[in-house]
Image (cartoon, rainbow, N blue to C red; front, side, top):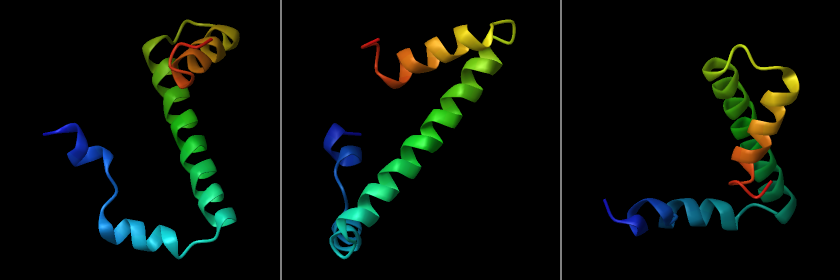
Amino acid sequence: MKVQDWESVSDEMAEVLRQKTGSERLAMAHRMWRFAFRMTTQAVKTQHPDWTQEQTEEEVARRMSHGAI
């Protein structure tokens, strides 16, 4: 699989997104981010059940920021 095969938006999806307002697209992005956050939190908790809440939050922040923090 080439990178462009999975990173590009299909023509059909592009048309759907064009019909949305900026606010609707922003809301969609926010919901996707929240979903990713919840999934990442659960993954960290599963991988490290002995960690404190603070350790878990730090690791989630690190992963969600791609290591920037």
